[in-house]
Length: 98
Length: 252
Image (tube, rainbow over all chains, first blue to last red; front, side):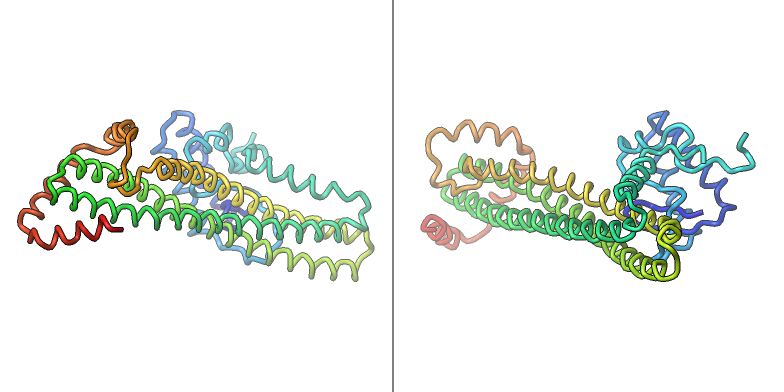
């Protein structure tokens, strides 16, 4: 799975990490719904950190398209409200899909 | 993928498909999208130049404010040493306002610098992808029929389109930041135009209202503290040196 962090770069992330990323994504959605900015920042920051540290950054001239596009790290809480809705940004892992 | 309902992904995908749809003849698509990519790279360069210009303007304004802070501080000392405490207070209030503006400007310049860095980085990635696309396009054109090459290259074009959208977002964020800063810079210019940071010895009638507003703007505690500190310094310092400085100040 290829994940782009907007204004930062693209990372190839092992598909096995999708469950963890999805859990953080859901936590971010829940925080937005609860209007809890601190909880959102914590979940979003961890989401980005997992991608950055567990993923491998793609070369600049790699032409692969991303499966998931995450907002920039400096996104405001208000902007986040437009992104993190419903199922969030990371697809639910296949095994838990109906 | 059912979960990918994020606004950002949707917007980016829409942009990419618009880009690819524009050329109707499959044979033309490759060259057309490459041409579009080069055009967008030009726009990015212009966007970066705009950010740099805005930043320079603010840095110049920041330098002017720094000079005002020094000048007002000197004038406060001069006023105090010649026994005019009211004038000293006005000078310190204005210095206070200038310092607050200065801090705010400097912080915004730093933020704009960060945006500029991201924009430049994203532009470099776009440049690399466009170059890779050009190479791939030529290889595909040589190896396959137009229709087949079209299919094989469209995914690569999507990769470039995604980077283009990313640069677009970085440009938008930098532009928003520049706009905010423009508003801030205009507010400072207005204060300057109203003579807020001017030589206090040239104060004419009708400045009372500005002074009243400034005393509301600046923290009176801070002004009081600074005034007290200045008094203590002047009290312990050599009186002769201060009055010499006062004359120099008035002459300028």
